[in-house]
Length: 208
Length: 208
DNA sequence: GAGCAGGCTAAGCGCTCGCTCAGGTTCGGC
DNA sequence: GCCGAACCTGAGCGAGCGCTTAGCCTGCTC
View 1 (cartoon, each protein chain N blue to C red):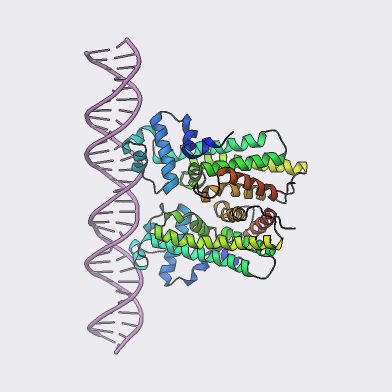
View 2: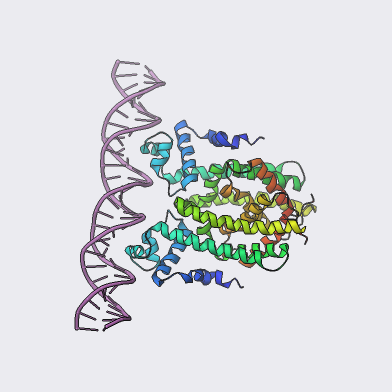
């Protein structure tokens, strides 16, 4: 699969399943605003304005501003989990699957940086129930990566002292990309993905 | 140097240089509130309340709420830079200095998680001038780590394909600790520091 | 072509925000 | 014992917030 759908204009194509059209435009506007300013610094008037509507139109499609963040978080985490699941369950050695997981996960964080920032850093702005639901998805993401590492340890491909700690370090490497990646910077999402995949294989002691 | 000054009750001792006493109490209260809720979700009434004062007292010591964040960011980044500088300029091989830099930097992010969260994740809430000033400090932090890695490459200790990219990955590993570390979790700051230092040495291809 | 449901806006409500200001208290210097 | 400076509070201002409501279009049904 190409990364085109996650970059530039295509970044927002992942929201195609959201209907009707007005609800999707509001959601996309909210993603952009939350990514730029953060949830609490974003006003409902700003979101509606970006979608070309009046502030009141927002409340026809969503009950509250928080519901927008909740839906964005759920869809985003579902996408992240899908990326990791596909990599974890494909054919191949643990080394190949880990490299695939890291490179595609990093590509998503870099190319879809706008979405990824909201998904990874605005979790605490959700209420307790919504946060608990999203945290469950996040633990599943961790579990997919940990599973690959455990496979590699079991098969003798990897040399890892602390599987849980190393898993967290791998996730850190991927997630933090959303914090620093800049589309005007020296790297493409593909290049960062390849670099980080190489670094992760070194971390787990995989043979080159 | 022990890590005691960065943990538990001692976390806030780094603000000893802030005077007078009331100004320091307000600053510490702001650090706690910003770390818990984020800058925009924190009210001046909350900060003043935590410091045991009326909302108006805040404006005797600080011109605006943003000035509080600015001062916190500057002091925090200065501390981070000092930690990295000490490790980078001590005696020893590049391997020893990199391990020292990572373990002490990670210890600071884990033990002083409250401060580190504000310092690393609330940067965008600053105005343009203040942000530019803080970004300069951040680039100096990167440069210290990059310097150690370049030394290791030059001496033949390290095997690194992309020095800039690897530096960013090392910083990611350290900084992201502030996002996930939990004082009630299974690790102490020292343990995370040692684990991440080991992983970083693997990333740069240092001999065990 | 009247009725009606869904989608939208203009106007604005109640509230809390960052911040201000007049005035009170405390305390060292003389 | 009085003065001025430093510090702090109670009260509250103007603004902007999330969200609501009354009513107007538009297009589909029969």
